[in-house]
Image (cartoon, rainbow, N blue to C red; front, side, top):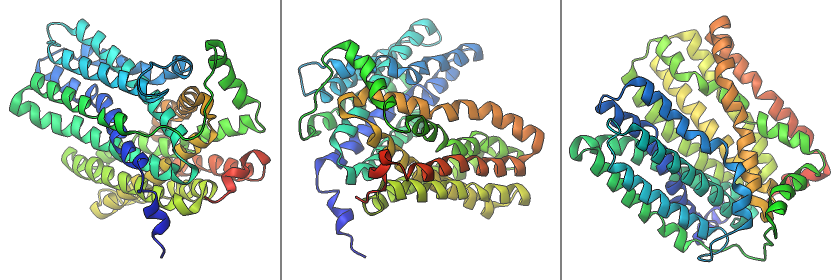
Length: 414
């Protein structure tokens, strides 16, 4: 086997930079979920208040609203994308440090405001990191770049989620958050070493153009509506299957410790392995074949949960089901992110990627309610069988789009 095509992708700053930027993207998101909830629970903040804090994540779903502004304007520091990334990272570091000085039990309102500004800054950072990644990566590196970014993102989730919880018992929550602020600031090293895109990219000249042209540019393409349907459907089966996995495992008789060790830790490792394997394979497969093969793998790896639902509490089956499903999901996510990058026009990559990624989240948003109804009425075996079948429309759409002129570059091997 010739490893040269795979190793060549590591001989530039782009891939290493994405590891750091992925970490910078994952850290603030992880901090405002489990660690903040744990801090508030430690101080005996009431459950209603803790529940309301979930609303601070709203900017992540609305980031396409201000993405055109970031396409049109840029601070005169490090370039069109890196300047915004640096501004966002400095704001994030300051906000995390300020939150360390607030007692969420005494000042929940102030903590809520700071958390909302934090998620706005974090969503803004994601907008421009996605745009930079789209602008700078050549076609043959998109899969590996997406996988490396996900790896950095997941490492940050572990640091902010698991490590911060452990540290809080030793040095307290305020000091832990100050340490996270320092780590966030150090991650800006990735922004300074990140290369600029090659070639000339013409930015929108007016804010009106930045708002209207991304929509017009995409919707005037051949088969644009089918592409939008593919974006919604490609990860739909995966979203259905994973939406109730923990509930299923609990009802099957597995303990919280077993679920934490196998589903959370083992599943995370399998997910990262799947993402990285997908990135390496895409160097040779090309985008279309990766989307098809990984989509099929993502669909088939749901089936072990059908077997687990039939066998009941069986550890080997549970371990295999969790690892297989997460590995397949990692493969599919890598190809899917590369697909979104391929669809973006570099002039409007911040706006278009934000819009397309928001569209792809529709499946995750609506999967939960429908999944609950299906599982309650038909049982787990039928639920996971339907989850398997839900992936078929995405595969069929992908195959149909293979034959039209718009997606000829999806067929082209790298």
